[in-house]
Each structure stands twice: as C-alpha cells, then as structure tokens.
Length: 178
Image 1 (tube, helix red, strand yellow):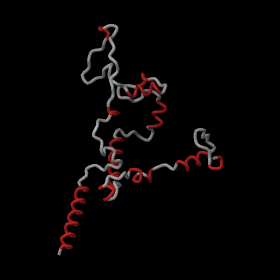
Image 2 (spheres, helix red, strand yellow; image 1 turned 90 degrees about the vertical axis):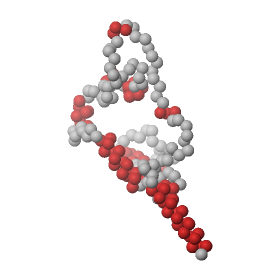
Image 3 (cartoon, helix red, strand yellow; image 1 turned 60 degrees about the horizontal axis):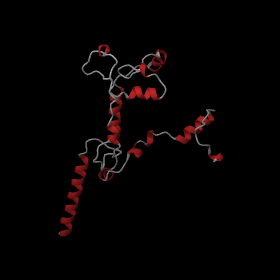
Image 4 (cartoon, helix red, strand yellow; image 1 turned 180 degrees about the vertical axis):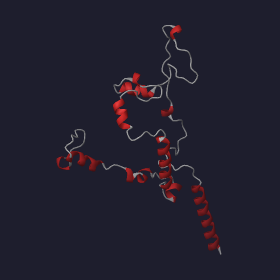
C-alpha cells in the first residue's frame, strides 16, 4: 500500500513539474538572465556633454519629440569611427544617396516589415526547438544545438574560397602547413 502511495506522490510531483515547465511564456534558448539580479551596465547610454552655443538666436526652434544636441547618436558615431561621413545619415538612420546601390539591393522589392516577419519566424523556430523537458526544467543552454542546422561550416567555406582562388590572408593555414 505504501508503494502505491509513494508512486502516486511521485506521479503527482512529475505532473506538477511538467505543468510548471509548460507555463513558460517565451522560449529562452540562452538563459542569459539566470541568476542576474544587478542592472545591465551595457544598457546605459550616456549623453554627450552639453555645449553652449555661440549665438542663442541661431538655435533652431524646439521640436517636441525631436532630437537634442546632447542626445547620443550611436549610428552616426559608428559611421564616424569607421571612417565614413555621419552627415550622410538622415534622421531615421538610413543612408541617403548611392541610388545605384540602393536600386540594386531593392530590385526584388523592399519589405518594410521584414524585422517583424523575421521576429515572428524566429519566435516560432525557438518555440519548436526550445529543448526537451529536462533541459527546460534545469535551464540547460540549448541555443547552439537549436541553431546548428543553420550554422556555417567555417572549414568547408574556407576550402571553397581557396579552391576558387580567393585570397584568404587572415585565415589560418591549411592542414598540411600547420
């Protein structure tokens, strides 16, 4: 009789564990938030130093919801750091000009909602590949296993480039030269 009660309790505990793991909302493959109880220091973006204008009359009128001279401009800063001209970026961060390049890239159409579509598709993929029951129960990292079919084989690509005669100066030497 005690064995039956113990088996019933074990089955009830197992059903409870399955029910709790099934209640998870978003499939989290990396489990990066596990054990983090401090603020994320990389989420803080400091403002630029405030500068006094040469003439207050030459300042543009304030625009509600517009930008400020002291606001951070990470896209423009990145373009300047890479040697580009940040003045070529408009307010939305899209590059103006280069009509030939933009025309070639958008020749098959331009999906304005591509980020939304990719986010939905990735969510569905992560939901289908979020690990087995015990992996979810014990927060095992299944990210690399889930995306392995989509990963690039570096050695095969390097061999393909070398066969095609492309220079690969930063790649390690092939096996016979190591």
